Image 1: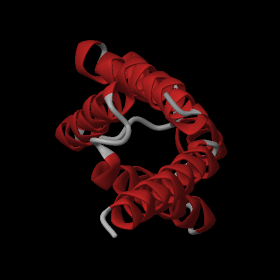
Image 2: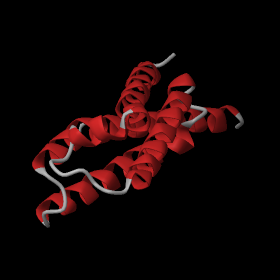
Image 3: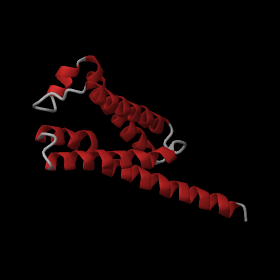
Length: 141
């Protein structure tokens, strides 16, 4: 197994565990969960549960990528795109005063730091796929 595949397994496996750890509490203790990120509780738990459910499903996709990074390569680009969209959305919400600083701080660890790691894996796997396709193509002629 190549170095980038081994790293992808570790990066995405860790990302999956983190996604599960960050999202599951929202379902079991809503008030405790939102109190960790906001100073005023939102009065719409179903939206938090929807977000947590989607983030949990991203964790499932991270597990799939970790299991076989090359086979799951098409999913990789969506992982860093999702982290970018979430990070940007939270940053804008912070700037306009919709979310407190501790929410933005949390996003640094749950989303922002993962963007370069996921991009690294994406580029590494893309290069490996390109080299493999080139060698396969060259072998045919």
